[in-house]
Image (cartoon, rainbow, N blue to C red; front, top):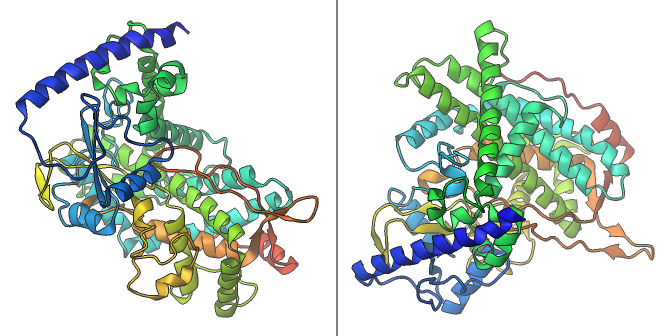
Length: 543
């Protein structure tokens, strides 16, 4: 309680410093011609311009009101540019990638005195360290080399089928399915990164990695809801911790000052995230040193004396730790969330599910599990995956970029330090590209002029694991469809219950709220196929 009350003088001091700096900055700066923007107020700018709710939807509505596919906002001095169209996103983030590949600094997440995630591959600045990370990941996750993970991906997909079989007996299977998806994909990523196979969701490496990643997502929150409802932020312990993302001047406040409990929390989280990176890395180092390691990406990198030859051993270790954690963090929640969205889409669109199962039965035979090599023979399933990604984008605002040099676009000034967001949700619902955008229609991609949704990012910051992710998504979707049918629950009157698919909260990765559904094996033969699936196949060599 004392800590919550103590946050008021902290915010007052921070606001005072911010407003004084803002006045000084405005007095010195010539008037720039910014892109279309809602009406702003003195000092606070567009603080009250963004309606409550999900930000990606709010930004799209602002663009519609302004009749512009680019929207400029300035909130407490921070300049933000939202790109609501494929053209604007491609023009800036692809074609001018050299200017727009930096990342904004989020104090709670990146400051060394707080959580110290500043070296993380996804959020580090556009610098030499990032180029080194990119070189490492491109070397092992390119289109050619990534196929060496396919056997392991197939094995984990078959394990998932067996783990889900028990959940078919439950009338409320969401949480069980959620947990099994998360563990199976997390297990896959730990094996790829370290050669380590967790035996249960209680495994310490799995739990530590998942906890660190979830805390990173929370620490990185910089949403309009956090800013707009300051009274809630000052009394709600969970949100209070992130006010430093809005008022960076709070970093200078000493830890003993009332209302700085967020600094203690950040310190605890930093210790935990460092442990989550160091423990599995030291484990694989020991395995390599004793010659008992299983094939893994970090195991191979530890034995690669050329790729990181310019680094001293300490710096090499630090960079490889970051590679390990981004493989887990970048691949686990994204893929498991997509699979939840896929299940929701199948429950709501049984015709699409039946069409996909028909394709599987025709191409592979009626009682056979697919492999990644079947992907090119299953075009409807590929299109279905793209339609799920379009309708339910995992990261609707993507990871923000930042402009690190003044630029001009369409005659508008975009100043250095402007945060640039590609609104994947708005782009994926653009009626100019997607006819009847609220309709789930995998066949829309039969028209080759219809673009695939931009879910893997843009330019030099595009996800380096795109080929691995596509293979993982395909083998899990095809495997689930080959043996299970997902359907709506019925009430006591026998009427179908149509689930409402809603997002939990604003975040970089948005997960659906629990929804009602049931599922079961397509037949007794399919149940036996699951039970008899080969899950002992050895991983194909990576090196």
